Image 1 (cartoon, protein in one colour):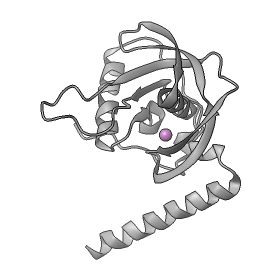
Image 2 (cartoon, rainbow, N blue to C red; image 1 turned 180 degrees about the vertical axis):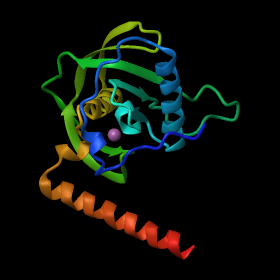
Image 3 (cartoon, rainbow, N blue to C red; image 1 turned 180 degrees about the horizontal axis):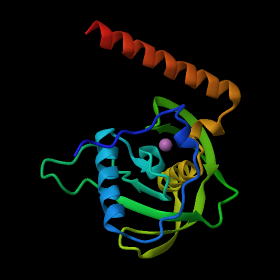
Image 4 (cartoon, rainbow, N blue to C red; image 1 turned 120 degrees about the vertical axis):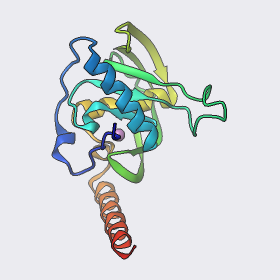
Length: 182
Ligand code: NI
């Protein structure tokens, strides 16, 4: 099957509010597998269903950096979050240089709560509740924003956001020129 295309700004479909997943079905299992394929191919560390045009509260993540090792195993840590919720974000904040597959090759520092208690279901429909920090807490908050139609650029000042979108437009124009020249 072809790899699922990832929606990019300013696609209005990225702004929809995603609906809860009602139950684990074969369709959802297939969607999860297809989302991992699209995320690894991009490559990226997180992907929300909304980004592949499926407005459901479901996201996949793998924070392990780099390609699989020679044995083809051991370096990946795929995680699935279904209907995730944040229960109590910390006052303490942390800053990460964030990027997003829907805002290709653009990065900016975003400040978010450093520690969160999160609740979600996994691919076996088992409920989890856990205290998360570090990159995992940041990435989950970034991906959960997608479920509410929010992008990381929305957390920036208007000036920074406009600069970043201008850089993206220029990169797209340059790659269009290169494609035509080839
Ligand atoms: Ni994103």
